[in-house]
Length: 107
Image (cartoon, rainbow, N blue to C red; front, side, top):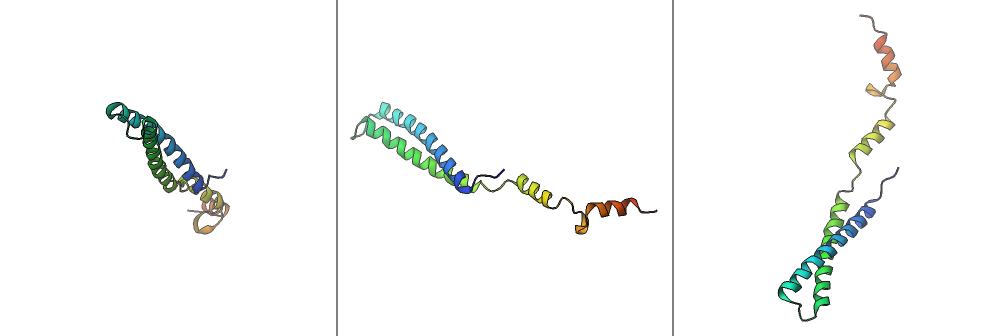
């Protein structure tokens, strides 16, 4: 199973941040309009300005954050390493040889 690329993580983070930003922009814009009234452009202009600016900033930060945190997980890297080195033990000897030497010892 292959992990998504870092660009895919960036896109997902930006999309999620944009959605959250639109919702928060709607809430804050509505509050501003109810409290102080619309600006010179009217209700729709004021509300859309809040929504767009909030969506843009949230999308930027969530996209960058998702991109930074999208490094391969350590468990996947450990699993791949163990699969590659599964049949080898100490000093790169096969495990069977090590087990045979261990049990054939005479004390």
